[in-house]
Image (cartoon, rainbow, N blue to C red):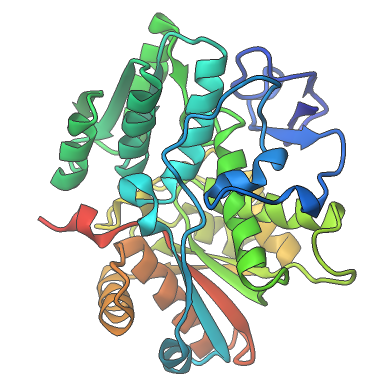
Length: 379
């Protein structure tokens, strides 16, 4: 049994049997809360993220729309640990997912709920990878799908969206402009707008990254996690997983949560700016520019939740220049064999910068996320 709770105000929606977007009282994201603890013994079976199905929001009798997402490799790289100056380093490679990014996890869950609710279709604004994932899962669910993307979206991503049969609308500007177009379309069509944190289910798919980190380390946690962050749902989801695992007894008593660090592009760093200024929410970034399109999110709805997680964990936020993103991507790919996306390169470089400036302990065990495949960015 699960309910939906506002992340800011006291609003509660009793169940998931009706369409849910943001909180109707304050407009902030809703989050799924479970009425009972989920025993770790229920983690079993599937070699996908559905091994955690007992901790995901499915009603009795509902079927998941799945392409085998999750349980991505987490590879220890001692030579890169030495290069950036930490004791141990793992890279969690989300580019191995169906649709070649971490977005598969969240969009799978959103489409699963949309199909269960018998909605007429789904839509989303995208900087790239979310569009591919929604198009693929909508195809798997046999649901109509419309996607709005900036004209500057990398051509391989545009091609993949079209290949999955979605209706693609290219818009001038950035993802914020695509978001406005998506909201207008959803209002007139009744399609479910599954934009980042505008519905409560994508985070539930994303949180499984946190479960996997713990399980792949033998049910323990690293000292730090570095996550490249645009809209914030990956960071928010992982932090939610950490709390659930501790509350439910999945981890040894006394386990400390990892310090959460985010990486953003210097040309679009609203969360970094807000974190350094001690603010509770982010001011939208003017004229966002970065070739790491997944980081080009000037006004993330998940700003409060992300900043809250960073501060609660004792972590931080780091911006990375375009040149450093490129060098970090090349270092990660050429020294590991991982087909790193620019966002993964940004995360690795952010870890290096944090160590170099004394904000990350050299004795730390660190997990860096590569959130997508580099192939999506090369043309």
